[in-house]
Structure formats: structure tokens, C-alpha cells
Image (tube, rainbow, N blue to C red; front, side, top):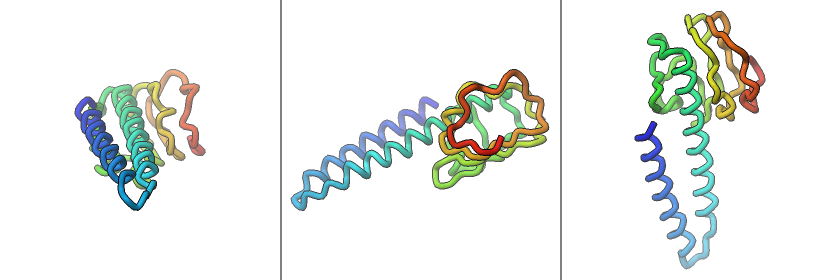
Amino acid sequence: MTALAAALTGLLLALAAVAEADTDAADGNATAPVRFFECFRVISALVLSVAALGNLYTSWNGPSQLTGWSAGGGDPCGAAWMGVSCVGSAVTSLKLSSMGLNGTLGYQLSNLQALKTMDLSSNNLHDSIPYQLPPNLTYL
């Protein structure tokens, strides 16, 4: 996760330099700051989603049947993480029914801001459902 955070920090600094250069242009184009903040929002959401999925993976004791998953980061939307569906870089669906998962739901589900569907049925999940669920969740 540290390597991912460092890479994203470098990307954000590069985007800030581009945005500053664009606003200094003679034509007075002020769209660069808007593009920068949109990029920042998307990257921040992806980092939070990766952290939440890593927390789930760890809470389930790192099950080997979840191909592509990692507790240490990665890109669930750019790589093939089993059961994860995305729209662009936003995690929108988590379908892992009957996967033999054992553990809890962790404590970072609310960081999955774009998640609409979460099917974890027929697994051995225990403890309570977290009180902070993803804000756009419509199917649990």
C-alpha cells in the first residue's frame, strides 16, 4: 500500500504542475484546475476503495480463492480481481457468494463510495454488520 500511495502522490504533484502551467498560459484557460481536482477526486476514491477491499481481504484471512486480490494494494478495476466489477475506476459491485469466505466485514466498507451491489451470501461471515455501509449500496 505504501508503494501505491507514493506513486499516487507523485502523480498528483505532476498534475499540479501541469495545472499551474496551464493557468499561466496566455489564453487564460482556467480549465486546468478543474481537471486537476477531478483527477484528484477519482484517484482519492480509488485509493479508498483499494484500502477497503484490502481490509476485507485481511478480515477474511487472505483466502487464496480470491484470485487477483491483495492486502497490499493494486488496482481492482484495472486488474482481474475475482468478484469485483467497476465502472471506470469506481468499484460498483462485489459478488462473492458461496466462496467459502470466513471472517468479518472489516471496518472500511463505507469507503466503497460507488458500491451498489454486495452479495456475500452463503459464506461463513460472523459478527455484526458494520453501522457505516457504503452510501450508494442498494443490494446487500
